[in-house]
Length: 217
Ligand code: SF4
Image (cartoon, rainbow, N blue to C red):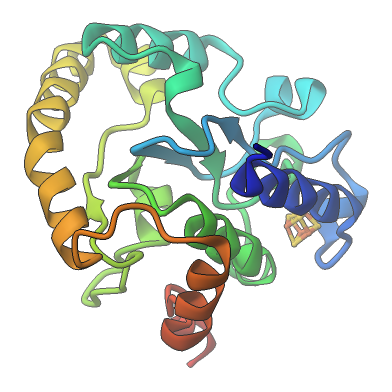
């Protein structure tokens, strides 16, 4: 039986590769739409691709990616069991932070990915990624029933080794939080389990997953 969600994510990746909605699209080598299990419970979100990711077209493939793999291994997970993506899909030149206008231009892709993936836990990696979900002084909605569990960016532990035990501890806490998050996710969906694609699209239209609404205000 074909996996509708995988097919929809793949179609979205084709759209992302063709996108030139902001200046980053004409400056990057290739887009980095994200990858992993379409049915992952855990979604890890970085800010934007770096040089290694831009060259490979895949998220978190450099030293930070290797550390991310080790952290996942600590809680018994391999990369193909989770989903990893970035808020912005194209690399900003010289690894600068993406501009608010670039984040806004790319936000529709993130919204559609979230609506398709329906993760149990979203773990933004670092404060820049967290800002896409929980800007200062505001509470933005995550997809229905999803728990937000912010983590340090693995690169922070590469720059400052003292942070590594904290990241390891936080990853353990995330693992322990998963059963309760899973229950909350199921209750929020009326115990119905995974929705069909048409139900997801209808819910996305209804709720609009207003993650970036305040950016436009
Ligand atoms: Fe399009 Fe996003 Fe790339 Fe900008 S960063 S060109 S909005 S895919």
